[in-house]
Amino acid sequence: MPKETVTTDKAPAAIGPYSQGVKFGNMLFTSGQIPLDPATGKLVEGDITTQARQVLSNLSALLEASGSSIENVIKTTCFLTNLDDFQAFNEIYAEYFGEGQPARSTIQVSRLPAGAIVEIECVAELR
Image (cartoon, rainbow, N blue to C red; front, side):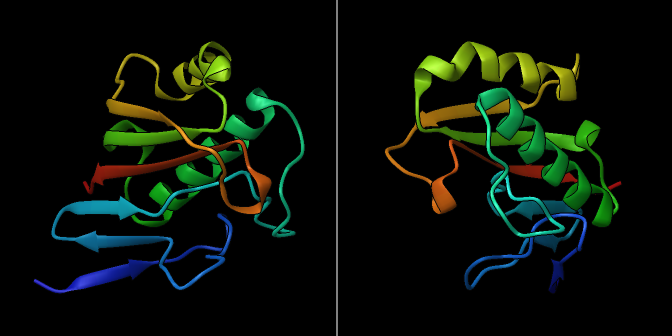
């Protein structure tokens, strides 16, 4: 079964040697999305709520480009530079995932690319 690269201009272009996402069978594996504006490639400035919304918007665009959607996400891995932002992050996360919340890990990291304060990657089913 061959793997297939997923790209879209509705999510930020990769800023390194990686794909935005990869389809394999009926699964999609995304690279981590950070709060870059897809039109400018620049970091969206702001607090955790502003940056989390941009990340989830980018992730949603990538899911849609692959033929999936946020409702089909099975697992996310979330990276925050400050776990004090956890509650505010959860509020934005819940807006996007609603009742169909996927499994999730949240990890505090010392730094993220481009000075971001949040990054999310996911695994989703293709339907």
